[in-house]
Image 1 (cartoon, rainbow, N blue to C red):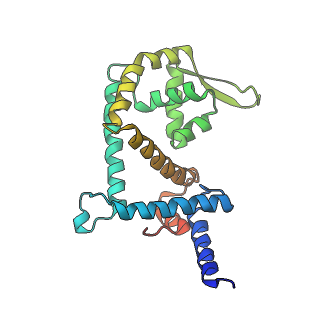
Image 2: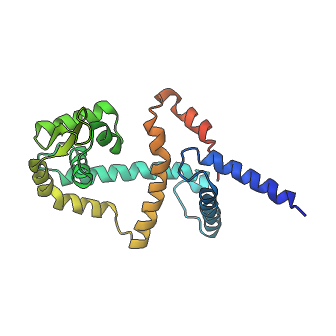
Image 3: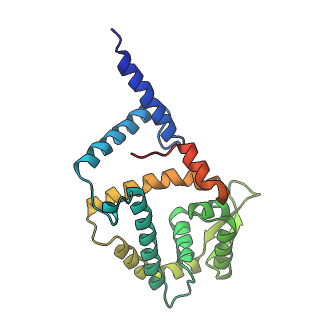
Length: 225
């Protein structure tokens, strides 16, 4: 005998999966569905076992509000340490050395690729790249695969400038991670990467500011978990 209630529940669950997975974070097949379901129900079980306290919780403040504020705070802390790391150097902003670090680690790439990787709007990204070019820290050259394309690569002078500051930069990144142990760092990376995977495709669409919240909220059908 067919268990129609089970079939109905599975159909409803697959509909929820499709709505939550419009960004394509999971594969749109049975394996993607099972991976999503495993994490979805594991998270719900875990959340029932232990729920942390946060500021304003007793007055009805939502977890989403606490997350947003904490991310803003952490960003400001990280920027403060970054400013200290480049104090007294030729670097004007933390974006300067972050662009160089990306080029050193990932190799040459187009301006557009470099700007997208750093989650900047094109005008701001171009200003940073032009500043790096004036410092002779990066240079534009022809692409080996496409003669019409120009790519950005780090120069020897850029590598030297980065290396001279790397000791302070490494110390700053260690401070930002605070007193988290190894397993906590791995879990934080997993969670932050999941958030990044959600937001990156939205950012890449360049939705106008006025309509951004309504478009994202309605399109992804965000709801209380």
